[in-house]
Amino acid sequence: MKRDRILTLKLPSPGGMEEFAIHEPKEFQRPKNPFTRKALAAAHVVADPLSAKEPWLEQAIDWDATIAYRRHLWSWGFGVAEAMDTAQRGMGLDWTNSLELIRRSIQAAGKGDVVASGAGTDHLVSGKTYSIPEIIGAYEEQCSAIEKLGGRIILMASRALAACAKSPDDYGKVYDRILSQVKQPVIIHWLGEMFDPALEGYWGKKDHLAAMDVCLSVLHENSSKVDGIKVSLLDKDKEIVMRRKLPKGVRMYTGDDFNFAELIEGDAQGYSDALLGIFDSIAPAASQALSFLSEKNISQYHEVLAPTVPLSRHIFKAPTRFYKTGVVFMAWLNGHQEHFVMVGGQQSARHVLHFSELFRLADAAGLLADPELACRRMKQLLSLHGA
Image: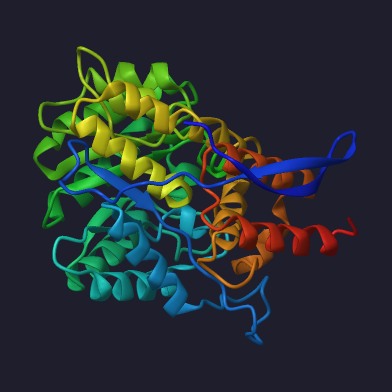
């Protein structure tokens, strides 16, 4: 559908300032029925920019705006994956504030609203060597705290385990012990080193296919305690290979923010459900597309999602761990928060040319909900950068 040009804005490019035409936003309909794919959005946190806390040392969170964003995601039919890397877990958000975030999200959830929360070992001191029993104890502490709140668990990858494990058997010991104790089936999260360099060699193998075999062994041994596995390797072929080897009843939750559209659609041998950070930024479009997929309207599913894929690939481009900056930038452009300030000062993690291209791609996807507001805010950012 042709969209009218309604505004222009000068944006920086590698060659200098260029005139850019902004189009009217696309219209997306909220879902009338449940999706045929499980879809969880990993949600960001909103910082409190007026706090006296030192941003590199302490977390100042605007709890009201943070929970309001979860309500926005629920309204589009998504479950919320809470206190994950999108919420800057391990890059500005500590366990104490993560648990408070989880508590508030569970409390805010209405009937039918899904919350699954990240449990890890990130309260352990970074750089210190730990024994396998100590790592197990750290996982147990976080899992117990979440379950006491009535929460469901996403078992996050552990930097401490990656640093201290001496063999794949150590991973088996940890996961077997934790999974034997959980009250409800969990989602296991395999986060690749492109998202977190400290997780290179997870499962005791640097080669992803060899690591996959270790992970699959854990899943087969504990299939009754595993709802699914979220794989974030940004490699669709590896995800498909693993998807076809999963135990019966264990879901593949794609974490591939580069190739999510085709992985969610699937093939004759199966499909991926989704737990994605990009859903935070593209919720209206992704929701509309998932509704089309539920209706088996494949052409419209791809028509809606196609322009969001370049946007997602840009937000998640290397260094991928800085993708949270683009996610928060989108929320600011669209009026979900009154500032572009992040926990830990992470708004500085990307350069102004990156933001300018993100703005262009968001327009192409029809995801600038209020173009006049988005233009005003983009001008503020450009002015701050001397443009």
